[in-house]
Image 1 (cartoon, rainbow, N blue to C red):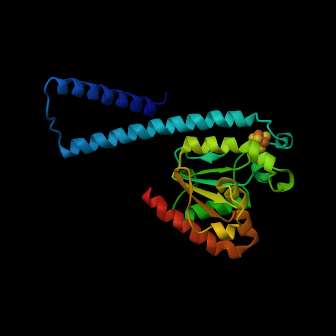
Image 2 (cartoon, protein in one colour):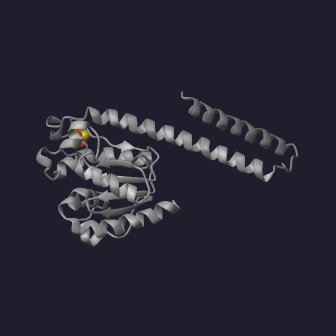
Image 3 (tube, rainbow, N blue to C red):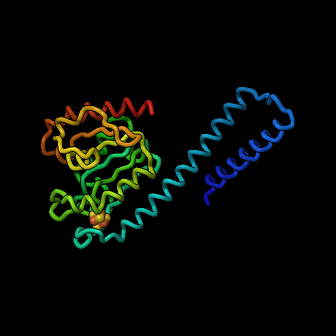
Length: 242
Ligand code: SF4
């Protein structure tokens, strides 16, 4: 156990013991505990930090286990042609998760999501809304590359989607950005084109999901730039409040 994690779990234990002590004293007639505003504020901050650290540890552990499971996955035919499984990367407690379609050639080679030209553009988009790649989490609907970057087949999506759902469950982000038709249509279970569904949030469980164009589509068609910029600015405004 790392130093921070041990400190967090010890702090939570102290808090629990204090709570039990106060409960007992209350039964014996204790009515008031006087605590200065500064002490109260410091205690609150310490509790929040401890909880955050425990949640982070839990999410990171769940993601690691899932990643190991996906690493040996042979549930669909893509396992025969992949070089690496591209599970995803980023902050296990991200408030914003980007979901793309599937790994391309660069991602398949490196085992990391969005590292090719489209990935570099995604990094610039993230930085344009004053975030870093390490603040967010990035993954795809499919964890293995479809040969020749063809569109994922529906049976491949069906086989792979449980990994993404469990990833999202572990991270529990308030905001999701679905990049491209495949990600948006799969997550929202609709067939509508991007032009009809982008530009506003859709409910996705307890999260808000913004569909927008995939960075690869943006590279092919720079006219989408204005729409993507509008979409990510909506995300940025919501991010500041969540
Ligand atoms: S694409 Fe998904 S379901 Fe298919 S082999 Fe890869 S990890 Fe398994």
